[in-house]
Length: 431
Image (cartoon, rainbow, N blue to C red; front, side, top):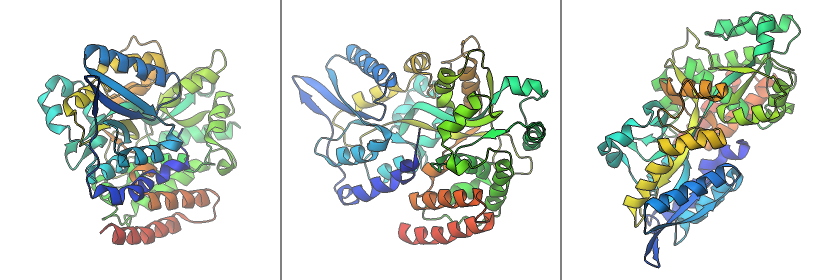
């Protein structure tokens, strides 16, 4: 899971790279024993995903004689420093992990990412295999630079047993959700399990509500460090909606970890919990026999000005080094490792899915995975995590102030005044 370290990810990388970028970066790729050696750096060292990646690399090598891989990996908490050091070295990775959004965009601006737009558009089979709305975050200024290895999104998980007991159905609108929470609360059931000790879980709620309430062009513009103002009244409105939900959450969310909140839901101590879809394997591993859950996306707010049908989440994937010696081979590997065949195996072995079409159908045995994939692939768009999309200073301040908001130490208006003041400073530094 992502912790507060992720909030500073993009900023740390940028600070460490600025002096290096002027030279455009070192050339990647080497030849050893007549083979083209491609360096691959990823952030999935845990099992079973690491073993699956290694088997896919071996499969690619078998299909491409003369290509060999040197693989390195680092856990997310160490990846920032690892990628910074690797890209500054004399032998940078040819293919490397990059979060969509500002993390990748910084590298693009620094001349460290290969533009795959033309190759992608020419290969119609490749282009048609990907869900356009899901890969959209890997575009920067209308050019495509990466593709997802896994796709993650946020959704409400609900206990089917508790919902059935009180004759409740998955909500379609915000008002439906509030009515459900009221019914549960009146019957002595905690409606929502929530743990915000590490601050990042609140960013998922706030990002989702900002997307629902704020006019989309305004919201997207505010994400640009050089332009963001955050003066739209919808941001305050979103925080007020958030505090309505906090009235239905467990006591002391800032003193509760996300993992404990998830376990409380599994143990029947709450009817709902807001989770990432990549947590489905964790839920099912910890659930008692007979436990059944359903999934629904964050309900629309009819009065909201945001784009309809979006899902909050993020693709996590790979990019190719701009200065690689072997762009043809590196792009071919990117196509393979993010493609449908790898995606099908990823679902079965790890419980994750990528942005490829058709990797799950109605016959897929796991209903949770099936529902999550359906939610993502039918979404009209994907809104990136707020703490990843925002400038790192703004993200840190936003999350800290929201913790104070939960404790009722500060008002929604004061939160946004703080953000507006800091945004003014960020704009100055970005110009």
